[in-house]
Image (tube, rainbow, N blue to C red; front, side, top):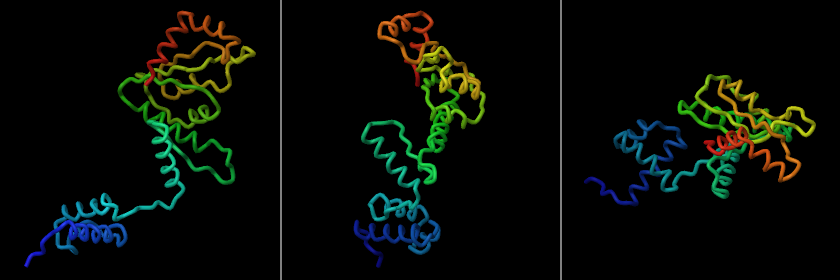
Length: 208
């Protein structure tokens, strides 16, 4: 007499399929054969074992904890993107991991065929990230600076990266020809009122 399927027996089958797949390492074809069901049904049962909370997967690796923390950051602060990277125990102050993660995200945007406006800041970590970029041809994009490029002593700001990234990806660059820090609010307003600066500032506001 055929077995009458109920919600309970369905969960039992899902538990069996989940155990065979995640613990015993069986393929879906092997699970189908052992449970006497089709391969498609075996696939659905394995998926059900996860969706019903019968299987809990733990990733025993620092990356697993990083992904968990990144998810919490996105949820708590309503962020679209958040990445947490492990540090080298022997060099806890190293920015290398952050730089690589940042470079990966920058490349993801710049590999888009659709033109984008990328607004870029400044700093030691960002400079290191730009050094990690894979050279590419992306002339359809525009790279615009969010910060001034002139240090207080009149020299070029050391961590300004607008030209570095533009050279690496062969995109048009739009520097902000301003001092890094204005001496007063009045000076800031006067500088931002200049026609050339207004155009660059407007472009930065269009950033993707």
